[in-house]
Image 1 (cartoon, helix red, strand yellow):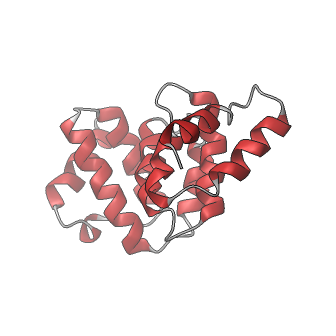
Image 2 (cartoon, rainbow, N blue to C red):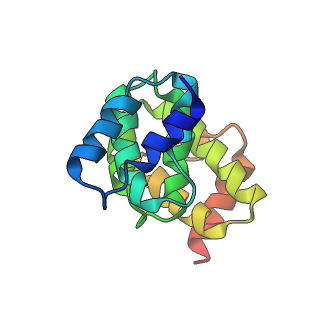
Amino acid sequence: MEDNLVIYYSYNLNWNLPKTIQNEAKAFLCQITNEQLPLIFQKYSKECWENAVDVVISIGYPNNKLALPNLYELFKDLNWPGASKALDYIKGLERHVNSVYIENACAKAVEENDTEWLYFLYEVSVQLHINKDDFKDINLYHRMKNAYEEA
């Protein structure tokens, strides 16, 4: 399947479009390859993110593994569309799975010097009962926690 077609349908996830178009896009995107899943999160299309989360949830773990980093990117701001739905979903994943993705997101947030993202990642980690013992790089955990405490 062409990536351009996947991108086209990902824009049809826009919540401002008629429900029939959104549902058609969801049905189509549930059939794409696992490698194409990250394509459904268009960076500047917040109106599409909540429906993109629905697609990732429908596909289910572990088939949706390649799209999971996109869910943790929604935690750059827990008020963003799809963020609360993503959080509810990942609460159902095993702790060791979440800890890997939280740590990877922390590393990316540190690299981008995004203290707000670190702040929200700490909030998410508390809700997931993830602590410093779950991190391979304890310095990342402390950077995340410090961002939270200094806010």
